[in-house]
Length: 386
Image (tube, rainbow, N blue to C red):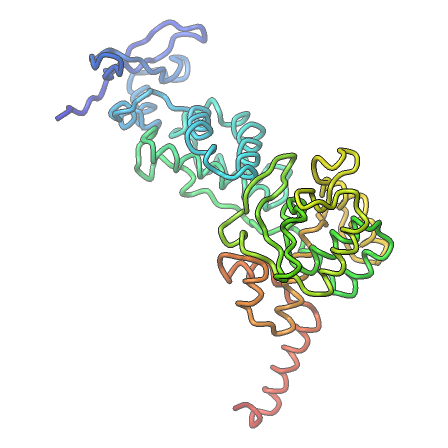
């Protein structure tokens, strides 16, 4: 049985100045021999006594770390992030990889990358997140990625598996909700939105509004995915930032219904486009000679948002408005029309019905007024309540 080691402290001259160093033994992987290893604890000018240096060893949980089989000394958050990218992130969806790398490289590494992971304090992280000039959902994503890094580190025994080694257990945000409620369009507004659009943009917008397909799923469609005879659209791939990816989830890969009216809209576009073969993209880019689809972000910026503003839809300057709002609008319309929730969940291809109700379905003013009228009627006429 391996004996628990405490290590010993020595002062060594370093470039930054005299430094307290914790010396201990590790088992070298190449030959299995026990060899001495060193971990810098802190500068002597900051830790003026040996007892202060030992207190810093305890604060950084270095005792637990040096007794881990995979001990590498002072494991920084940057070390954990690199290990995560190499060993776990590659298994995730392309969009997740892009988002997590962006957060790690643009936010976490610049601020925390050189910090010893177990020495980071939860209150420090909270203050940092609160000071970021970002929307609440973005702060929540940054916190989620940082939490993921610590979970990964504990899973792979890069840091101890006790609660004290994971500061994210106590990090909270004042609010994770968006600063704005999603902009919801009525079916009439959605139809009016496309009245002056070119045929491609018109078809894409109607398809999104009627099916709830994500813009990446729409752009990933090929004509062979449109099953006119079977009255369905097959969701086989997504087009994201110039790359092809699979469906977001297993539920997302389920077919989407294709009504006669929507089929007519798609057939009109298929007859007009230069790229109508089964293997062609439904919304092919003419500039790229049909080799890849159009860019959804550009179409939202050039057509969707300006048209909504012209219609009088209230959109704040710093508020997002794009094709995903049409997905929210579809869910809201169907739920407020008393459509069976399981049907709405199936149409939107959500794995959980709670996502449909809590995130995508928003009560509109008429529904709220009707609910309040029902309550007032029940209070004024108790005898009418069964």
